[in-house]
Image (cartoon, rainbow, N blue to C red; front, side):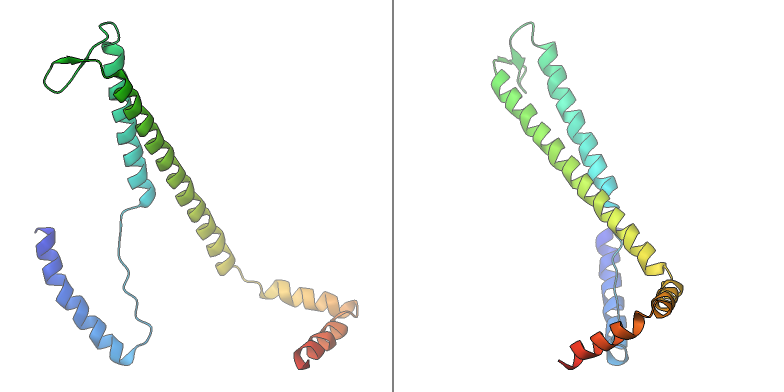
Length: 151
């Protein structure tokens, strides 16, 4: 089944379900599944490194003659353009590495957020309030909060 056919078949079904739930339910989510961004960036990085290696190998193989072969097999002296292509690819590689680092930071933040969301803070808060009460510091804090709230 081609992707266009799949999309043509699924769109009306999804729209029908959205309309069905939109009448009675305000919490409707439609999530899309996408490929892992880190994996996509890793494959882009691999491709960029391969292109750079190919240019460098071409440069090394033709360094002795001083001539580079163009697409027609004719010799040309384009060392400057090859160097600029390599520099451009290196910039691309650096950009991809930066994007990978950003994605990894996002994932680390998501992991920390999930840990905080799942943790049960009630025992900690109960004990904290109990200790404040034992040290006679809870009542003044409550009074101060009430004053701030009325002000």
